[in-house]
Length: 289
Image (cartoon, rainbow, N blue to C red; front, side, top):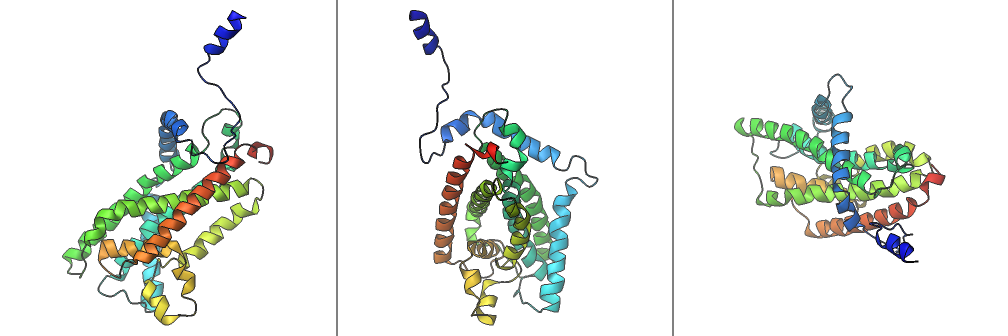
């Protein structure tokens, strides 16, 4: 009897069913922080390891997209960007938008892509999408350096551009974009385990969402030119993040306080709902993947 009691007292960890309806598991995530860093390193190193151009893809994509948008929307369609050069206007929106899409698309198939690992060893599953969001910060950093380079070029060329004092809050804006992409990605990833169609629709949905997020035009333009459809943009929290980004970096447009409050509230709700569904799905997803 004493031997049994001593054996039970020697256990370091005890695995029990999770009875909580909602749990952030922050303590457990912190305990596995070394694994989180390992996954971040894996994501950074292996994505372009067997490619010819490697990290140059980080630079090619936003540059060619900005050039295309400048030709189509500013030169052909005649969309005005005020005193800001159209290319720089588009590059600011695309740089931030790319971070959101990378977080969303890469986390949207977390369960399906990592089913083999999840089925063999235990660790907090939320570490996987978290590592994707963190590793994508490197990609964003590289693209943002490109934006800074063109910003300096146009500034010394005489363009009427300047930074706004609110630029100090720019990191918080990027964090908000990452959290929104994480929340949506976790929610979609949970749906993909049962409904594979979502994995095919996500690419099309992201492209469509870009046109409703004011990436290549100011929000004021859609309000004046198409007031009957402006609500599609006004109720899109991503549009306020893009608009605020251009205000911080280029001092063009304005900041909508109510829009940011709405965006923050929407992001918090989406994140907690996504985490709730994600934690619930991880208990039984192996039977459906």
